[in-house]
Image (cartoon, rainbow, N blue to C red; front, top):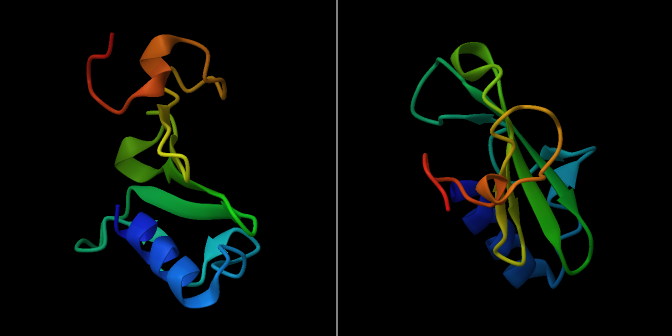
Length: 100
């Protein structure tokens, strides 16, 4: 969620989401998480346009295979639970362990 706060701050200061990344890698926030550990389990990326963005956390190391998480500027959240690169089932539309 820190990356979401950072990109909103970028928008407030610049009037655009563009420029918050360099080739998808955040230029406004660290590119790996968690921030408070040397054992990084997610790569963080940004896809931004002038008025929208998608933040992606791609699992690695101990989280490898757990499916990527995405947060859209619209507030939509997805989790590719079965790691098949598709958001197809209603369960993929939330970040909770169980979704209806």
